[in-house]
Amino acid sequence: MLSVVPTHRYPSLKAMALLSMLSAFPPHASAQPMQSLKGAAPVAEGRDFIVVNRVRFLDRMGFDRPIEAFSVLLPKGWKHEGGVQWGSVQGCRGELVRPAMKASSADGSVRMEMFPAQSFSSTDDPMMLQALQAGAQSGGCKVNRPFSSEQFVEGFARRDLGARVTNVRPDEGRRPMMQRLDDQSNATARQYGQNSQQRTTLSFGDLTFPDGTEGLLHAVVVNVTQRQPNYVGGGSTTFSSTMATAVLIRFPAGRRQEGTGLLAMIMASHRMNPTWQEAQSRFLTQLGNMEHAASMERIRLMGEQSRAYAEAQNVASEQRMRSWERRQESQDRQHKSFVQAIREVETWRDSNGSVELTAGYERAWSRGDGSYLLTNKPGFDPAAAFKDAQWRPMQREQ
Image (cartoon, rainbow, N blue to C red; front, side):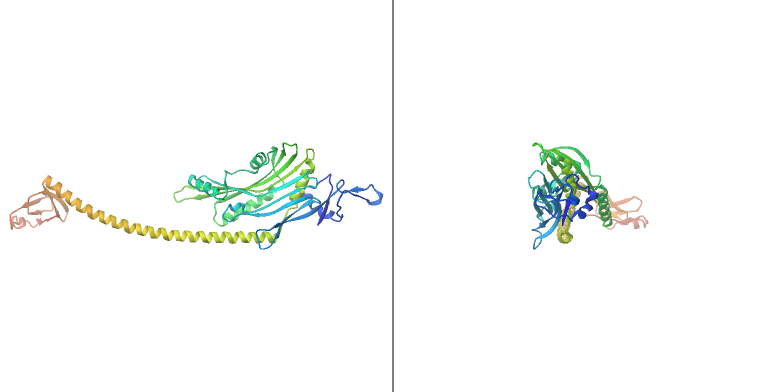
C-alpha cells in the first residue's frame, strides 16, 4: 500500500486515517516534476510531497519458517533492517521476544530506531535480592529498582545514546489507552487472586547530540508490583520494570518539526500481524504451563523428599529421645540414690503420692493425714496394734 504525505505538514496521530485517502498518487523514484491539474505549477516528489510504503519485518527465528511479525509506514527510498529477536527460555522472560528495527533516509540525514525491550527486577527482601542478583549473572533479568518512563528517557539518552536531554514530558495522547490496559490487567490479576498492580507510563524527551544533530525519544515503561505475604503476617514485595518500547528519531538541527511528524507517522502506522501475535502468545502460554507443571512437580518431589526426611528425622529423634530418657532415668536413679544416701532418706509411695522418709527402715505405713510409721520389727502392723484401720502399708520406690 502506498500513501502520500505533504512534506510541510506531517499528520498527527488522529489524522493518520487520511493517509489511505492519498494512496491514489503513483510512486516516483525521484523528485521529478509532474503536471498538476488545470495548468497549475508543477509539483515534485520530495519537495512538495513524499511517498510512504508499508515495510514488513519478519520473525526468522521463532517458527519453522519466516513470518511477518509487524509492519510500519516508511518514506519511499528509506533503508531499513530489523525484525524479531528471540532470547533464551532460560533467560529473562521479559526479554524473550524483542521486536527491533532501524531505518534511515536515502542520504542518511534522518535516522530512526526502535530498540528491543529491556526488563528489570527487584525486591525488598534481602535474601531474594541476592537470588535475583545471582540469576542476573546467569543470564536472567537485570536487577534495578523500579523506574518511570521519564527516568528511563533521561538515563537512556545520557548513558546509552550520549545525548543531552531536555523537555522530558508525558505522552498525554496515549495515556488513556494505556490506563485502560492497566485496568484490564489489574482486574485479571484480582480475578486469579494475585496481589499485583500494573502501572504504565509514557514519555517524550528532546535530545541534542555532540555532533549538533537533534532527536526525539519516546519510551513506554510498564511497572508491576506484587506483594507476597508469609504465614507470620509479614511478607515481601517484588518489582518488575519493563521498557516495553523505546523509539528514537534523529535529524539535523532545525528539522525538529519534520522529525516529530515522521516519528508520529511511523508510530501510528505500526501494525502487529495477528497471526504471528497469536502464535507467539500461544507459545508463551504453553511455555508457562510447562514451567508451571515442572515447578509443581519439583514442589511435589521436594515435598515428598521433605516428608521422608522429616519422618526419618522423627524416627531418629524419637529413638534418640527414648535412649536419652532411659539413660536419664538410670542417671536419675543413681543420682537420687546417691543424694538420698547422703541425706539418709528413702522414697516411699502411698495412694497420695511419694514422700521421702528417714532411711534405714524395712517397712513404712501411712495414715493418710500426713502421719507415717517406719519400723524394722518383723510382723508389726500398726492397724492391728492401734486398732486403727486408716494405717496403710507403703511401697518403697527403687
